[in-house]
Image (cartoon, rainbow, N blue to C red; front, top):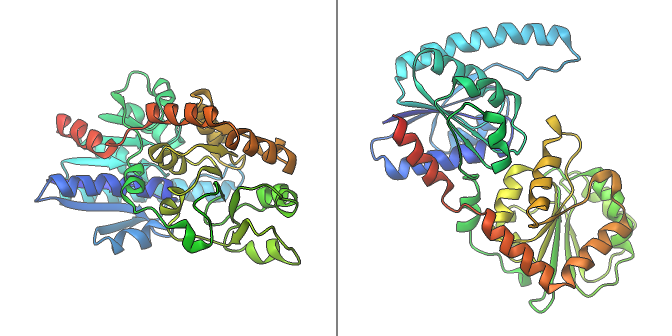
Length: 357
């Protein structure tokens, strides 16, 4: 069996793609995989390390403000489609899979035109532009949020969940005592992605400086924001500030509550791990999709949301205390998280794809 997989730009697209590839490797002993990504984004480094054949396309997202760059990009898309056609005619895939990012547009478009079966996976509750544009050309669509199904009317769409959550389930739980935390105290983890968020840091710093509660906090500032955050500050002994943690999923398994952005991969992991969270959606992303991701969780009574514009030290303190001091509220969240969890997402995707090829 031969598959072409395309996804790019962020881990939120790349890691679901890898989870799908790994499921196909498990099921198909004679599998051949070819990955098509960008020439300059993170997938170009991640994918070859997984011993997966990699082809790159020079292509960029449209800016709306830089007309000359967008005109150039139209020409690059034409070239990318021409390259994709040659790759597919040579490789002869049974299925072409797209997991998001603008690089998938020429890949799926060409596959559809050549009559090759196609599948796209949408991680966010509000679908990305590429996936919306490709929907009518696709043989099959999987979505991570039930709310997304309405955007793909007249398409062969199913609720697949997010396959990257399976990686989190299988990771060994970290021993929080090795970081100096105590098993008899509740742990709250703050994290805003590997780069962190200067806006969140500034809005909750007073809360940390004046902290005097009995639970413990691990605050992850982001790699480049740590020095400025801790400079000339002393924090309560129940608080640990670090710039980055390499295997966050393993540590989140030890958390009683997580305060985080609302990226699709983060949400899918927390749902799979059955960990209550307060989501602070980034207002700086396309289509405000993190807001709608967090809203879907809030509406399911499986988590809480604070918009960044409303965030301050008092609000975050009150919201954390409201959850940690109410065991009934925590239990309700956990029960609703169970209802949302799809723990065999990649298996479901594999089986659906096998039905169409």
